[in-house]
Amino acid sequence: MSLRSKLLKWLVIPLLAVNLAGAAAAYWLAWMPAQAALDQSLADAAWALVPHVQETDSLVELRLSQQAEQVLRVDHFDEVFFVVRDLNGRNIAGDHDFPPLRTPEKANTSLPYGDVMRGQDVRVVTLKTIVGGETILIGAAETHIKRLQIRLRIFLSLVALEVLLALLIPAVVWLALNKGLLPLRTMQVNLEQRKPDDLSALPVINAPLEIVPFIRAINDLLERVQDSARAKQDFLANVAHQLRTPLAGFKAQLEWLQAHHRDDPDTARSAALMVASTERMARKANQLLALARSEPGDFERERLERLSLDALVAESVQHFVEEALKKNIDIGFDLQTTIVSGDRFLLRDLIDNLVDNAIRYSPEGSAVTVSCNMRDGAGVLTVEDAGPGIPESEKERVFNRFYRIDQNQSGSGLGLPIVRDIAKDHHAVISVKPGADGKGTRFSVLFPAISMLEPHTAAD
Image 1 (cartoon, rainbow, N blue to C red):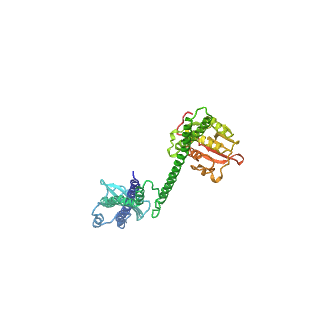
Image 2 (cartoon, helix red, strand yellow; image 1 turned 180 degrees about the vertical axis):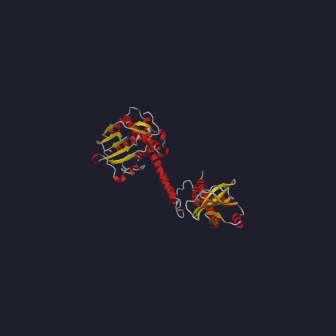
Image 3 (tube, rainbow, N blue to C red; image 1 turned 90 degrees about the vertical axis):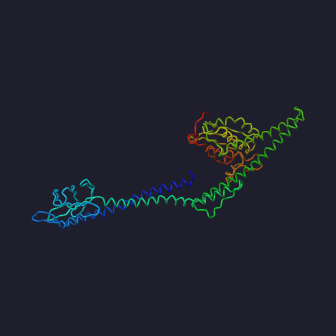
């Protein structure tokens, strides 16, 4: 459903409902005063009889001429009835088949109500008054013909008005929506007419106030896309350069080996160079693969499973020890049972990059400590090195792709960005603090409790 259709539904239906409710209220507001006026007219007829009710020789009677009674009963639409009774229900005058009268609470007051007389619905007004010390009741009644005609006129008038409004409301709302949504249409045309590489900002001038935040959000997105596109271009250029050198060296050494015997001392040296080049190539390839797998937009939650983080670290202990021995680094492990919900391959990449980063930046003869444990139901992985440390101003920038504090240090600047993306995929939080005694750096990754993250539980 389009936005215009939704707005039409949300506006027209409530407006029509409110209009109908208003029509019902208007009907009653029109009918109730008319009903009161008709009741008052009927009460006036009853009051007109009061002067003619007199007491003679302790006997109350109605002295009304036949001509006056005819005038009282004349009505162009309804039949009019009347009766005079005492409190005991004795008829003094009037229609003897008049229905029982309801008694008003106070004297000289009238009480209107509905009743039935001679098989017809009638409106009755009872008047309570005192004549010669005796309380009497005067009742006047009329049929509903005049009242029904008035109600019908009120109803038909409101129906005609409601039909007109029901036709006008959707038309007015439709025109208003088209006018209100015109800036969105203009923005749509602007984006549709752009070239694929045109990521310039949308104009904010003359835009409606409500759309300005939306335009700014799109502009922010376009700016981020531009930054990402530039970063990817730099990344591709860097990868091409990084892979070209080891591959070229590998090819050159292979060609050189082909020209010499295997037992030649120089061959051993060449083999060592090939191994070094191959290792560099493999590391770059692994980082590229890890970077691709850790892209937040490509992550699949279905890959999450219940994992033992300490077991994942233990699987790579031998590799870490071998790398540390190359620089005479004392690497220690404090691995306690740590259960998290995550992707096995991504978490291995996270561990490898954190530990490799620690070994790479730690000086020879120093120490690196890797630990994991549970903290309040959440898993924590900590890697502490003895490197130069990270200044407070650089703690956020080190997670940017291709950024390196020490440009003389080997590497592509992808390790920590990979760690950041993987942590983000797992809703984990990374903290960067100084190591023991303020020396080195301690990276900690706090994983959420399993119940907060994993969609299903898989066997470890």
